[in-house]
Structures are given as C-alpha cells and as structure tokens.
Image (tube, rainbow, N blue to C red; front, side, top):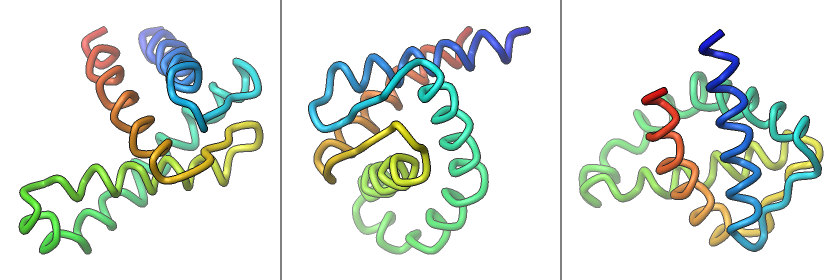
Amino acid sequence: MMILVRWICFALAIIFTAWLIPGITVANFWTAMLACIVIALINTFVKPLLEFISLPINILTIGLFTLVINALLLMLAGWITPGLTVDGFLSALLGSIVLSLLSLGISKI
C-alpha cells in the first residue's frame, strides 16, 4: 500500500516539475505514472554504472557532476517515455534538481 502512495506522490511530483520548469511537458497523469517506472528502472540499472564510470570526474568536481548525470538520465527518461518531453539540458538540469528535492520529501512518507 505504501509503495502505491509513494508512486502516486512521485507522479504528482513529476507533474509539478513539468508545470514549474519550462521545457518539460507531461501529457497526463498516466504518462507521469509510466515515467515513474521508467525513472525507477533507469536509477536502478543505469545510474550506478554511470556513477562508477564517472567517479574520477565526480571526485574532481566534489560531487557536482552527479547533477549532470541526473539531468542526462532525466533526458533519457523523456526519450523513452511517450508523452514526457524534456526539451534541453537546462530544463533537464533544473527538473532533476526539483525532482530530487521533492523525492527527498516523498521518501519520508
């Protein structure tokens, strides 16, 4: 039951991010629900590999390169998910920051 509540909250966070950040659009609520699944799969399988490969750059930038990785992964999610569009890197960067902050709150539920 709690997983469903978090899933819905994260979908609402994606919709809020799309409303807040120009350049990110979500077609409807069901697209946001699908985007949650895609983002979860990307964060589970792709993100650890990218963070391992980029570890030297991440050390040199004191962890700030993680923001770039998150933005690129949000762009990948927008490319995979029909109905979710991310128009550029700046939109993806701002959107990933907003989603990260919102997911911190959602994880407390």
